[in-house]
Length: 217
Ligand code: ADP
Ligand code: ADP
Image (cartoon, rainbow, N blue to C red; front, side, top):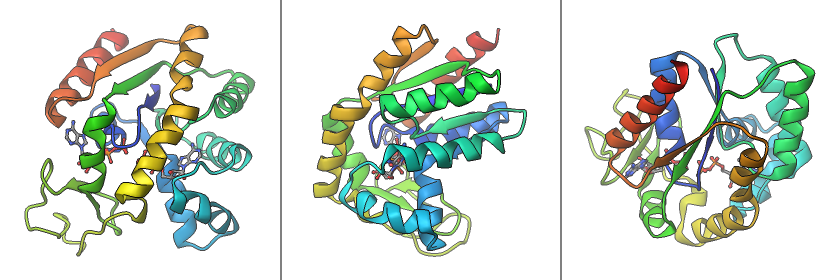
């Protein structure tokens, strides 16, 4: 299956993606994770992306489209879940053109819906493992030992863009530039699976699985 996971920052895209790939066996392709790895490696792309990411702005479309098309071309036949991409209509067009060229298509869009009020506490309480990428929450998904990754990697950190000021900017940018991506796919006639993501993590997962199972038939 080839899926796109849409939703505002903090909707639970990364959390649900991990569970989807465990059950259905595709790979997780997160534009944010790829960008953070590029920054860690201090690559040309990582350096270019840095200032945008730190302020919560979007990295320019051309850089993102090239980066994600390259990753998609290297994906295994089992498929992928795109997390955080496309985030603009121009990115949707770039993805569509590349897929059409390869004779492929997206099977469904999973649209995680959460009101803005619920998001701030999710984002400011998010804690991540810089080694394995696991994501926790100080209240909603606590690690076994406070501040430590369950897999023994060491200390958890807060992402520098998860501060209240940067989160507010990311939500504004989501409303201005990314929210339209759902309508873009609706107009194209893609299958959209709307999910109430303002529920407990396990309940959201159950709803996602139910809709994906129905889709697979
Ligand atoms: P995204 O990838 O969409 O930005 P994450 O999956 O990283 O979102 O989740 C953001 C934060 O909210 C994490 O700390 C995660 O543990 C927590 N979280 C995810 N889903 C839920 C949920 N349904 N209810 C409460 N907290 C959640
Ligand atoms: P979240 O999981 O909270 O939604 P991400 O990890 O997906 O956040 O993204 C972190 C930052 O990386 C974004 O604020 C943005 O600067 C950059 N980024 C990630 N994906 C894209 C994209 N598709 N287009 C432009 N910028 C992106």
